Length: 197
Image (tube, rainbow, N blue to C red; front, side):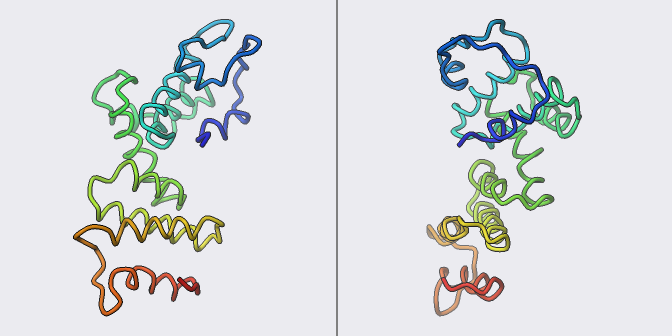
């Protein structure tokens, strides 16, 4: 997964960095410390911090605050959610990726899911931000519902993951009747979206 930066980098109106011939991918270069840029400046260092965060946290979603702050400092200068990201972190060090993740959950992923109805952000919130099974079930189900309403190709997979979040373990969050948790999970989805589970 190339993440938000990978999808947006061609649209950014920032000067391109000169790269030495034979330079490995940016994430590999960051990991090895051999950037290969003709000169290392604050902009590329900040981008490298994002790559380190992605490697440390296991995905792009928990590092979205680094992108917000990069955009404010080096991109469009739009304040966006960079103030929230800065305020949500207890330390000023951007290398505390646990704090970056907590800030990203609070400032970007939750609002992208709830306010903007972006299914992949709901799923990311479920995976990276929830501390209990009920929260995981809720946000995974939101991702499932959004995928079904949008007719996404991966709706089946997302809904199976949501079912797993809601119906695994000793406690479930659906007051199921004769058919058990699985039926109570699927029945409202089948009725609302006219699908067969």
